[in-house]
Image (cartoon, rainbow, N blue to C red; front, side):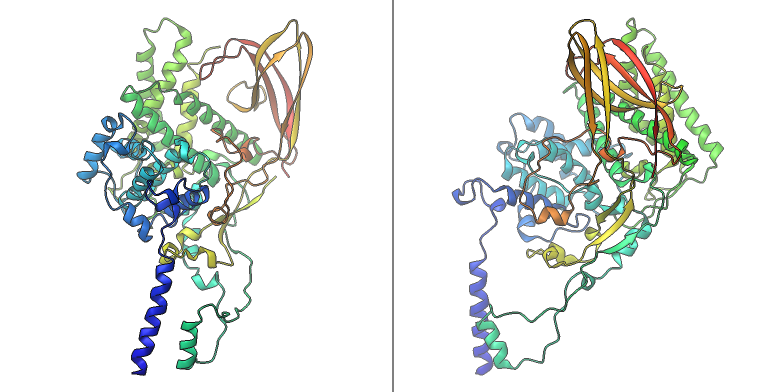
Length: 591
């Protein structure tokens, strides 16, 4: 009788506690519920983070799995006219054509651009926040994590109801795609107990003390043993911070390739002009120029620099080519020759020379994935299911073959034209083998220590550039500052650009370039613990700010600063005629 009474009392207490806490969070309430309207920003921020938490594993959050249990095909839940562009994607979902979790994801799969566009539209065209939540949960559960994260990042950038929310860096969401195999495997060996406090040992409790504990759940907890709060550091021990190994740059590159893919697919459907190629090739020129300057500073050849191996989210290592260097160069030359023949055929009947650069950029951008796909087939002799560095934009820049391809593409496109090291720690909590992270309680809050990957990155100190311009009369000009190797006008690294109205006489402008102190986005743990919205107001489309200036040399890297004045162009259009160009020698030092 005593045992039965004890069970009954415990059941009453636990049942009552459940009934008091069963109300759903604001972001999971029906849009017609007046209590949950409008959803608070903190709840929306939490929703985004919960979806990305251990995104490479099955979703265990009960409310989220319930929201994403059914494919949303109601036209009223999407923007007007959206079903015309969504119907083919929804049909492909029913036919199980969209990549599912746990497979091998490749950006070079012929159907992948359509899948990326489909998932992106599935998210961005949702009519309201509640519909977006349902679709995001469905995509998180049913689609490949890399496909979901790529589309989710683009959609959050575009939607009005998410513009004030912040995403963690993608190399925190999926560290496996950015850090070396040794770093990831070492992180997975770290146990949960190494990061959380442990309970002090206590004597065995009597049945009466157990009963009192259930009746008085708010009694003080046992004291916790003090725990070292220093981070558990996994250092890649690379003493030289190479540009192509920078995880923030790889994250930016992945986002840019995804945007290019979306732009190409929408252009194929004649929905809009494909304006993205100009930015794409501007960034290629920036990267190639910075790479060449780094070679001068370090005395190494970037195109021959090979990084330690990466692995996929499923733990499959990337494979390299068995071809020798000369054979690879031959394949690259054939690829560029074939592309150049296509360009020559496309511009053969063009009457306006000023149209040629646009046509060339448009053609090469539209063929970009085909170029990478044909190159991969030519140099990789492994079978399906064996990923290569060309398969993922997150790994592309680490591949010397891909870097050589960018160098050749930059030269080809240009030939048709007219006229300090901070140590950055990145959270690796998403690679821990701990399903409890995804429970409703969210055990991230128990952590006292961080599991981080440590990387040394390039950075520049704060500096100023003073520009003195003399104008014979009042005039509006576009001023651009570039860095280039001495005695070479191209390639060049874009440093700054601004439009101003010059008064007659001497005009002085001082441009300020502060050091990039943070070097990365807020960590996932930090975003979980903050309610403040993004404050920068803009999302940069250029290289990460800490890579604004190339690596210097101890004795000074000799470059030239080019100042170019042009007629200001309209928004999203080419700048006007070049009015004046001048250069001066500069030195960049590395400490």
